Length: 166
Image (tube, rainbow, N blue to C red; front, side, top):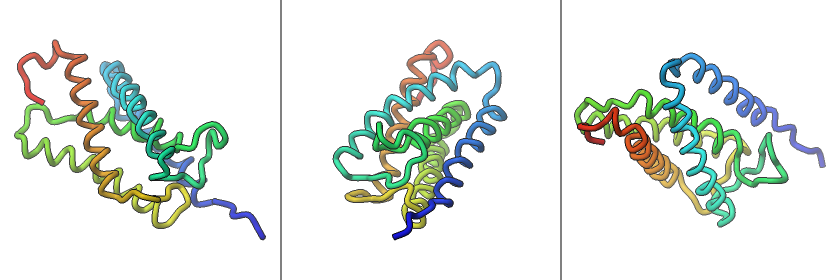
C-alpha cells in the first residue's frame, strides 16, 4: 500500500505560515507590537491548554501535522500560530467605540472565518478530524477565547480603557 503524500495538507500549512507572517508584518503597527504580542501570547496559553484537552479526550484529532508529530498531538500551526495571530488582529482592530450590535458582529465575523476554514479542512483534508466534535463547538470556543483575550487585553491595558465598556 502506497503512503499518501499529503501535498494539499503541506501546501495549506506552509501557506498558512507565510500568509500569517505577511499579515503580521503588514497589519501590526509598529507602535502596537506590544499589544499584539500580549494577545498572541495569551491566546497561545488558552489554545495550548484547550487544544491538548480536546485532543487527549479524543474529541478532535489531527491526522496530518507538519511540525512536532511525535511530541504533540495538536496542530502546532493552527493552535499556536494562526489562531493567536488572528486573535492579535481581533484585539488590535476591535471596534471599542461602536454599538454592541457591531461588537457582536465583530466577534461573530472572526469566529466564523476560522470556523469556515476549519470546516473546509475537516471536509477536504487530513488536517483535522472531528471525532466527537462539530463546527458549532469550534465557533463557540473561538468566540469564547476571543472574549477571554479581550477581557485580558482590557485588564492589561486598563489605563487606555478606563471609562470604556467591553
